[in-house]
Amino acid sequence: MRINGTQPGSLYTASGRRKYLNTDERCRFLAASMQCPRADQRTLCLTLAYTGCRISEALALTASCIEREGGFIAFRTLKKRRGVVVIREVPAPIELLDAIAVAHGIENLDPEARLWKLSRSRAWQLVKEVMKVAHIAPGIHATPKGLRHGFGLHALRSGVPINLVKRWLGHARLETTEIYLQAVGVEEREIAGRMWIPAGKSN
Image (cartoon, rainbow, N blue to C red):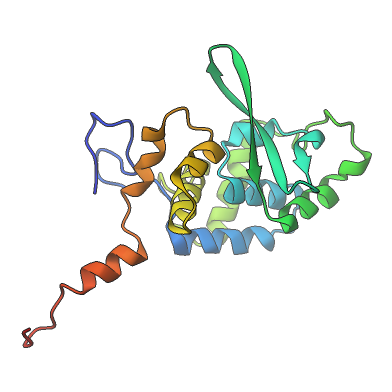
C-alpha cells in the first residue's frame, strides 16, 4: 500500500521509487560490512544497520554511549523537542558492542571522546562504498536513510511490537512508525498466494 501526501510519510517517492533496503539488500549490506577491512567503516555501517539510528546520531556517539554489560547503545536524539535532550537506549548484538569496543579502544578512550571523527559527508561516502561492494543498485534506497527504513521494516516483520520500534527509532509520533506497515512481507505474500489459482485449475 502506498499512502498519499496527506499522511506523515511514505516508503516510496512521489514517482513510486522504494526508499528502503529490502531483506536481501539488507543481508548483503551486513555481510559486506562484516568483511570491510577498515575497522571504523565496518563498525559505522554495522551500527547503522543494527540500530536504525540516523547517521548524525551515530557520529555523535561517545565511548560512554556503548553499554556492553547492558547490551545497548544510548543515542542522543538530535531533533529539538521542547528544548529537552532525549536519550534512547537501543538494544544491540553483543558482537557489535564487542567490535566497537575493540576497534575504537573504548577502554582507553575518554568517556566523552567521539567514536567516529568523521564529517557527515565522509561518513555517507563510507556507507555508499559498502553499498557498492554489496551490489546494491544506486538509488534513494541505497543510503543511510534507506538502512534506517530497512531496520524499521525488519523489526516489525520480526515481531517487535510497534511501540518498541517507535522508541528505538526515536519517533515522536506513532504515525511516523506506522509507515513500515505499508510494505508487503512474507506472511502477506503467503496469504495472497492462496488466492492465486494456477491456470487450468479450479476450486
